[in-house]
Image (cartoon, rainbow over all chains, first blue to last red; front, side):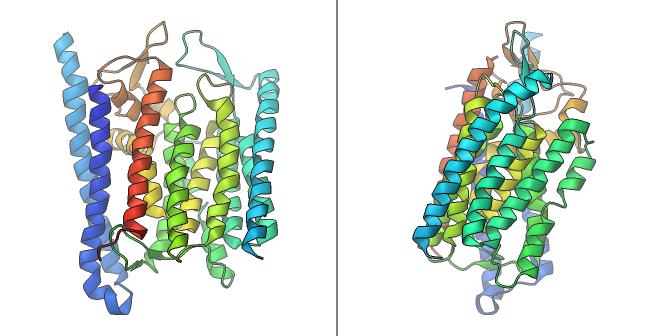
Length: 80
Length: 347
């Protein structure tokens, strides 16, 4: 199995799991507000969406940096 | 109108779309070649010229197919799909012919979602979308009454740009959407079975899918035509709208994760809205025999293509196969997400 392909598969699975984790967080926070009124304050919705998006972006940037360092730039050092 | 007639109408629309796209693309290849409207296929050793854009044939086929479906069902959701595909495609066509900048294109695309909102709010009981977002694992939907319209405005330009960005290799843009539409249709079907979705959204997938199959025949490796921005933006717009009218937003996002990650990694490296052609340090290089390799330059942007090539150089057909395998993995995860949303719920 090609290392890059395995790494990319892992990235996709992690990205997917983060979306599922986000759903659990949203639901856990929304149920107390939402269950009877079927509505969560739009400001809370916006803040929640922003925080979860930033968390997703931060984790994916860390993974990307790790991939580039290990699989792309390390090869340059090896060859030089 | 009863369901049997709607299904018959969708079947006719799909056949017309397929025939129109197949015949139209074939004719367009000859026309574009005769007018010298061709571009260099960078990743081929023989440096061949390929006709572009093939988008007009694809847009015409989708619009006519969805137009037939709209004519018989009078579904405003189908009309929304038709309008978004047409508008995204026209913006792409302007870009193909005049070259829009890195800011002008997203600015124009950000207006494409407006007709969807207009149709939803100006026509009573149009049911273009439902602002109750279903999350995986939980049966209670989240009411996004105020946020959802904003998400519609953002999602369509993001999807169009995402598909546009992944259109760098033979067949990848059309092939990725072909693979992604399978779990999207599956998700819409599950939603309908749960009594929470409209069969029209599922029927609307078929003219799009059949058009895409016909186009992929010419766009697959080795490409005989490139879709251009008109084709890739229309596809992105149609895909986003299908996910909105079908109520399968999260499933659709998961299904195109490789394309989303490509766009995200690119933007997070260059840190601004910029066209690929404006990038000074290219993420990949090509050897005289057509073998592609990842750039080791620290200034080069990170893209899906550069990551696929990270451990070994490859020929284009192999890279395309690797990307399709990643798209298939995402499609499986997307189908699992659909099951977790409408079948296996814990809350």
